[in-house]
Length: 282
Image (cartoon, rainbow, N blue to C red):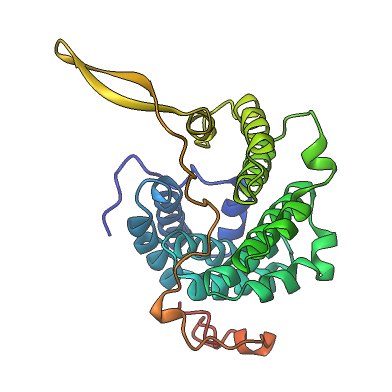
């Protein structure tokens, strides 16, 4: 796949560059440039990012950073079975539990919230850093909601991280999940309070909390033509119950038939650099 000339490969993280040093220099450069394209496109064009990740995977399937990048690209395109296989391969190569929460979320994506909850109670969670533990809490709460256990989801999100007044990178997302769960439980006043807290902590506008808050206040924004420009005008409107945000992703047809339990031996590398096992489709 074509890569712009100004992408050199040096843009990637130094730890990844160090991993790629195990490859011949020319090959390492090619892999690095493809990984840069994955990182650049994964938010705005995940399908294209996925294609670049497959190129990197064909070139260097024995590099953990490549397997991880391929996993995130597959995850972004809702190929949850494939993503899980790549994440498990990366975990096996590095021994790190860093990917445990997103692996559990892949289980949700495949329609297995019970498995995600099992992972939320596994010993690996205790080895996660604070952001990882918060992420695991979010996944577990989502799994509870998948099962229709709204009150349990609310309890799952409660804790010192939620109660803290300090703003961390994960604060807005945690508060948002809590506000949305409260709303799903019919606790509208509390939900409004927490959406307001999300707005306070979401400095970069990564959530739509301000819109959700306006909706709860009965404010609807519509476009009104004034002269040659469209100017948003606020109007009052009856408050309707918003759609639930945290729902289980639709299961892909390709995810069917994934084995219920994992066997680490299923992901042994063969002499060609590929891995066995249904999850890894490298």
